[in-house]
Image (cartoon, rainbow, N blue to C red):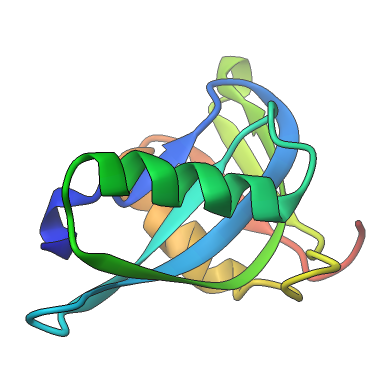
Length: 118
């Protein structure tokens, strides 16, 4: 059930890669988009691998489709998150959609994006 999957999981601080993932329940076909970003992952594909392994350990029968990526600059001391760039492997995520999802977890933050830069 996709409702059991958190909408957002980002490292608490720093600049790192992120991906936008469409998760779909294989039984009900219910789907939603989620955002994941981790400094420990050197490649966008590493993030997807980690997310799939984590969620499958929970026993959820879910399909994962990475629809793009980019970078995040998370500055908690300023209550700011900036989304930009692209993934060479997955292409550029819809940063507007990513920002809207991130705001659900960080409603007091100034969350912005740019389609420029890498």
